Length: 206
Image (tube, rainbow, N blue to C red; front, side, top):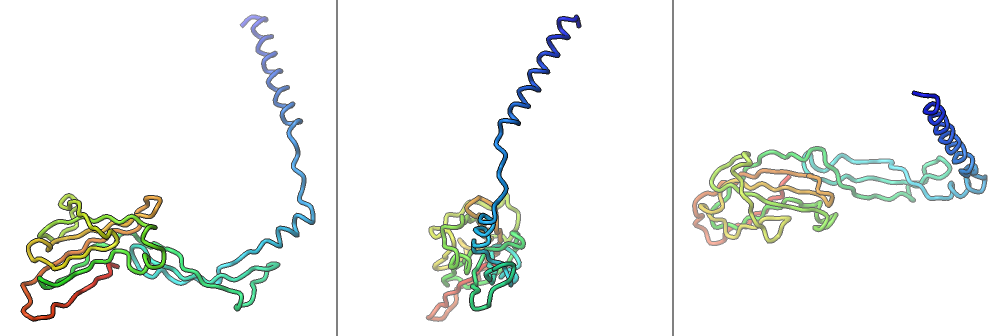
């Protein structure tokens, strides 16, 4: 590199450093918090969780009960000022395979959300179903899409031995499309029950 190139390089470096120094000097320095600001921060209500229950289910979507108490000047407030809330919890989204046997002709309701839907609302989740006819399996390649008018639950009324026996898989996602539950239900259907009042059965899938 000639002397002209060296001078040009040094000039560019000097301009860059000068510009950086100018930016630093022109940036406003934040003022430290005043005593009044700190008092305002202390006035903001704060709460601390004093008790939290285990998740209501070992797999899939459940509920946890928490007790919250006010925090004032670093001290937990009196119990009468505390309140309880329910929050969603997931220890594991995989619930494996469950099996159930019913008689043909009965009404069967398979509920995939249960207490969580009652507490949080049905529009807080996306539920989908898949079905493999005539076989109890966890092989996803055998499962085809199954349309359920009420997405949170599947109603078979009446149960047909030929049409309905097999495996049902329910998948639950939250509003951010995160999977929070997957369960396989193997449904075995017996022969027609010969009695006048066929029992209606409801299963909450846990």
